[in-house]
Length: 243
Image 1: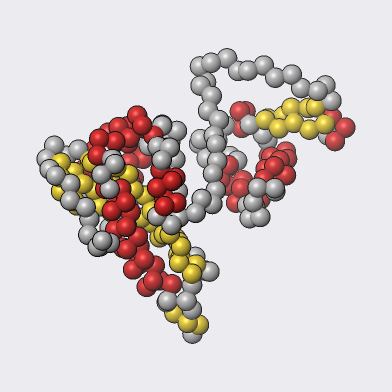
Image 2: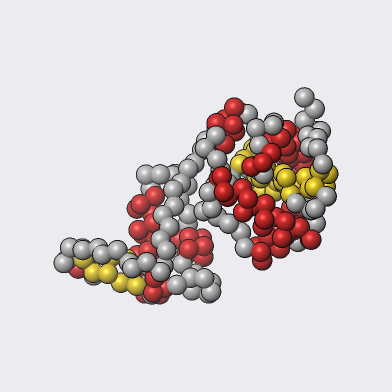
């Protein structure tokens, strides 16, 4: 099988993403969510950012029909690190067109393109130090049909990390939680910010050997300059004797 050849899909044409595709991508993701789940649905503004990013558009291909509907979509992004070059692949097929080998063919095409680009970067020259770094193909995704993992494993990928997320509808009443009287609950504030990082560090120490540094974790998860961060909704507790 020619890995540089995109699969033929009757009634569709392959082309790169374009700025006019944000509505089609939104509809495409919603259609896929009916089978795969809807944990991480992008908004229209988020899809606009995707189609406006040159590093994505130049590494993308979508199959569209005459009406402009997306049947399959794939792209990759490169993370050029000091010790390695990572390619993050994204590929998805509309539920009506699955089980036809389109997903595998698209994945092989993405791999071939990503490998070529990674090889150029990995064998680059840093000043006077010529280096050859490792090259990794990676898939990071939310919401896929149950057979997706098996398909990727069959193609040679290894599951490295999985995470479940708990979602709670805010219009529902908060669940009652009775805690020990010797525990003190506090909302996030600058003077107790380190307690939240400590809770992260202690909780994740058994899950990974690459814990985030305190400043990086705070910037990502507890940044008071981020308009999405809600300090009042962030709670920590500690034994009263420790306060």
